[in-house]
Amino acid sequence: MPSRRSAKAAQHEQNKRTIVELTAWITVGAAVLVVALHAGISETSTAADVPRVTTAEYR
Amino acid sequence: MIELWNVSRALGLVALLLMGVVLALGALHNTSLSRLAGQALPRFVLVALHRNLSLITVVFVVLHVVTVLISPYLPLRWFDVLVPGTALYNPVPAALGAVALDLLLAVVISSSLRRYLTKRAWLVVHWTSYVCFPVAIAHAVANASFRGGTWWTLLVPLLALGLVVWALLYRRTARRRAALPLAERGRTDPAEAQRAADHATGSQPIVRVEEPAPGAVPHPAPDPPAPRPAVQEMRVVPRPAPPGRHAVRKHEQDRGPDAAPDAPDPDARTETLGGPEAPTVALPPRPRRR
Image (cartoon, rainbow over all chains, first blue to last red; front, side):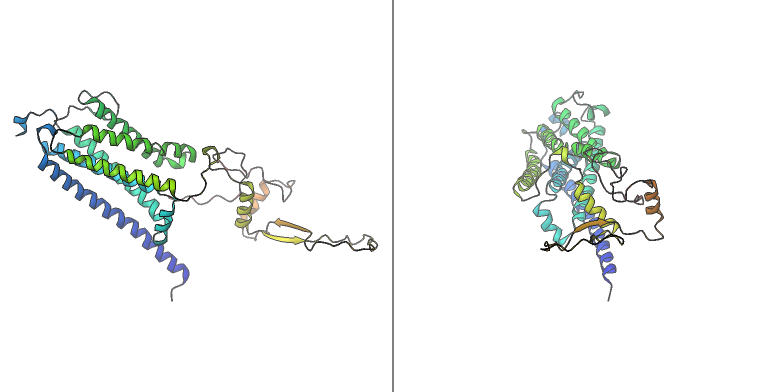
């Protein structure tokens, strides 16, 4: 039977792991979102979306 | 190279979305929603998440700025992203982005140097994030092309703005503690400080009953005995220090032999928002955490 102190320490370690895992998952989600947004922007981009580039240069 | 420009736009949009999440987490701090989430996760988890996500946001913002600088489609110099109004191309949106970046840097640097700042100074700088976010939203909207095919990217700042507005409205409507004026924040209530000192030093309230001196002549019994209260005097006295507590002994020696044992220690003060007049507890210094 674990003592109360060891259970509390184990819960604290679990909470710290939760912070790291949540941060990592959100970072991965943000990176995936960057890739998705880049793909979407590249797909729908027209000449008007590109600064200082004429339509012929863009094509 | 056109892909680099698109990557920069995507990085900026994700940074804006992350900034909205960070701002919403900060706005929901100490509300009923954070307390509700705190039943599953301790509060320090939410605070650490707020801090970690803000650092990730800074990373995305830095990547956004770097890709904009190295992209050949924008004639931006390195100081154009820091000094507003110096950009030659698209000056107004670039100036908005520079202002947002400067405010973000101020928040990040002040949070990094928080231990060297007073809480009030840090809080004032930290609240500029409420200015940084609308400026960043304006930067994103002004840079979006309303004529091109990427008009749908406006949904991202709209989503981030909606998230932050919802968090602020929830914060306003949720039941919270009464807000203190800024000048009062960080002040220490003397009674509360005394209670904290009693708790920290282990002082226990004891009852002292006045007893007659050994040689004193007892008073004649009064005719009608007046009703005496059960407790004549209740005082809080410090518990005697154990023999191994040298720090407490040294601290008591510093106060001088003439100091009354119950008199408040003149050195028992700390730096608070309200200045040095707020009496606080005198505790031995805590070990510094690395």
